[in-house]
Amino acid sequence: MKFRLFFNAGIGTASTQFLSLLTLPFLTRLYAPAEFAPWALSLAFVIFIGSISTLRYDLALLTERQIENSSALFWLIFLISAVICISVTSAMFISLWNGWQFLETKATGLTWLVAFWLFLFTQNVVWNAWNLHHGAFLAISVSQLLNASIMYCVQFYGAMLHGGGSLWLVIGSLSGLCAGLLVLIISGCRTNLRPKNIIDAFPSFGESAWRHRRFVQYSLPYTLFGAVRDRLPILLVGFWTTSKELGLYSQAWRLSNVPAALSGSAIRPVVLRHALNHGFTALETYIERILYSLVILGTPFLAILVLLHEEIFSWLLGEHWSAIGPYFAALAFPAMTFSLSNWMDRLVDTAAGKQHVNLWTELISGVSSILGLLIVLSLGGSLFQAVVIQSALLTLNYLFFIYLTFYIVGFKRVILIKLLLLSVLLFVCTYLLINTFTS
Image (tube, rainbow, N blue to C red; front, top):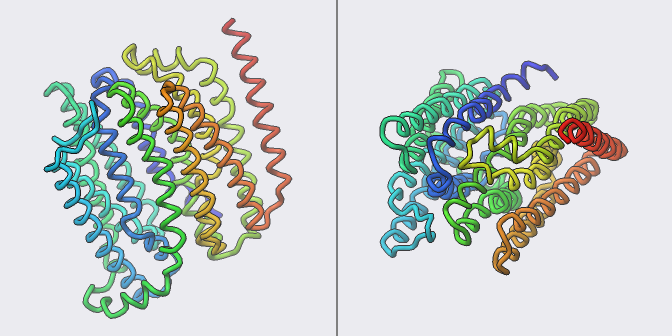
């Protein structure tokens, strides 16, 4: 497996995450936590709907080899996402007319922009799937990088010249998506890659939908529960807490997902294509090396964040954001385990054909973590207490999923015990070392 493939697949996400970390200390000094609240609610809603807008037929594209079949599937995905986008947008305006909103974090004034945001996001999902089908990893990475670059430029422009506010955070996200979508469309419409005419593909819609129905039966619910786990907490916190607390929680959640986003984007597509083409046996050694590398690189940072979270975030984000430290310290544990498992789901459902396993594990993970968060908040507990319970449940679920994946694909599970012992040893040693120098 060539390193170049990992580089092309991961450079986009790595660059965007680098930009995110580089610009965040400046953005947090220009935008208060409360200003991030409507933007966070809107983002959670858009990603929640956008992630299921294709009914997960986009995953089926990876299994198609004939241009006629893949073109039919592409246009089917395009039309399904368009119908869902129009339906949800109509529901949004009905809710606007009825005055439904989230306490202090209301985003009703942004409804028109959020509707356009949803349209752009769903189109990005569609064209990203077509580029991924052809292995155009570099084009996807360029799209991600351009998206992030323009988004942050617009957000800085709005803060420095127009006083900031949630509106400019949203406008920045829209501008970035437009640029990223343009790159994906240009790449996907190259002469040798573009899909066949929709009229020619139309007769095959029904056959394509039926042949790949297992993705709707299993992968769609799996993605839905994953979105519940990842996005519903933002909506719940927005309902139960103040704008400031939501702003703090949303950014802590966003930062904690950086490691998983990096590992998932760089590893998932390459490993999946390799598994589909060559089987699991040739993958075992590579995956062991990947897991060892992630544990060795990530565990010391986890210990440092847990011990010095107040000092790090007060210096990094500014005094207005110093309260984010405890939330991030709690979320760092599931973040670490998720970075180890975030790319394994495609091995289970697409390569091994065990979509029902992904479905049940995601159901348990999403429901248990959401219930833990909800119960603590509804009983009057603090947001930090709720986040601790949520983090503990997520960590256990991710560890179990790693074990289950190794069992399904037939890898030696003894490696997981070694990895667990190694991570504990690295955490304790780093913690004691840092504690000695800081005490």
